[in-house]
Every structure is written in structure tokens, then in C-alpha cells.
Image 1 (tube, rainbow, N blue to C red):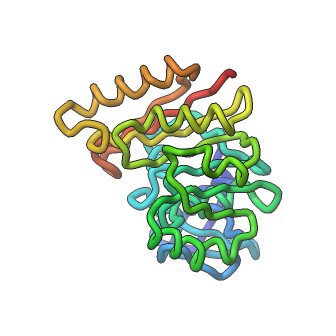
Image 2 (image 1 turned 45 degrees about the horizontal axis):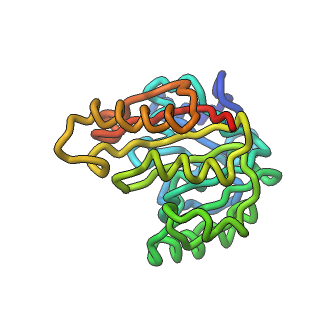
Image 3 (image 1 turned 120 degrees about the horizontal axis):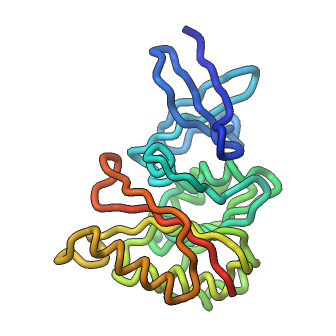
Length: 232
């Protein structure tokens, strides 16, 4: 069976790839032709190269497979990515926004940002690595312009407050947030469902409207993806 690729019916620049064994996998067009970021398989269809998208390595992919109804990240968007790590999901976001979009990648760990720079950003001109603490957005405010979306994947106890602080500085009115809540990073003594509720209440208090929520098991335990809009 030959590899087949077709667009996702809801989300621009996200694709379904049917591979040789008949299974369907998420994929994005590879903006850096010939290069794999985290060992993902590269495939070709109709002379276009795609990267298979592993939901066990990417909470964004996991949330789509768990039925998330809204993925606000679109072609040509500017995205502030908080907690970019070594670039696994950020590289797929780079594929989605394309050459006329941009991804500002904030990461605190020096080793992770080195990997992000050397393995990902060096081959993707639409990505800017920023070594900084997402809790202190004023320190990188001169590097980031107004963005359409914020994607947050943070291992901090006050994740929602960090997202809201960054939104106040960088997110345009009517912009979107995709927020991966890590329940065990917030409070290991509480049930994950209680943590999700607590963090969502913080967002609502800070001016966000919750649009969608997806729990990420079995791909990620004790995680939920929240999609919200922000009104200044």
C-alpha cells in the first residue's frame, strides 16, 4: 500500500497520513526539507515531504487525537511558545504557521535551548529561540512582537498565572491560548481534575473565555489541553 496524505478537515496545514500498514497518523508539511527533529519519520506524497507527528511526544498532537475541536494556530500566525524545550512540538507549529508566520520560543533550560538552536532553529528561519524565564515576560518584551496565539507547556506551580501575564504583554485582543495543564507540576496532593478546574478558574478571572478542553490520556497522564480566547 502506498503512502497517502490528505488535509485534516478542520485544521489548516495539519494532515492525515495513511502509511503502509493502513494506519492513519497526523502529519505536517516539513518546512526544513530532509531534516527530522526528534526521530520522526519523513514521508513523501505528490512530491511534498511530510513529518509524521507523534502524539506520545507532542501534547498538541495528542489533543487533536483526543478530539479537541479548536486549534487556533494557523498559517501566517505569530505564536509565542512558552516552554519550547528542544523543539519537538514547536517545530510542528513552525510547519503550520509557515514561512510567513513566526514562532517565538521561550525556554529556561540552557541545554534544551542549545538543542533547540542547533537542531531546529538553525534550519527554520521562522523560529526565534529566547533563553528566558516565562515567569518574567518583561525581560524578553523587546524580543517579541504582538502575537496571534500563545502555546504554553510549562512545569510550574502557577502555570495559569504565567500564561495570563504573558498574554497581557503580547497577545492581541481576541487572540488565542493553548495551555497544556500539567496537574502534577501544579499540586501533587490534589486530584488532576481539581487542578484543571483551579487553573481554568484563574484564566477566567484574568479575562479568558474557555472554548475547549481535552484530557490527554493515554498519551500524557494527568494532563489537559485548554483552548481559550483573550479579550483585553
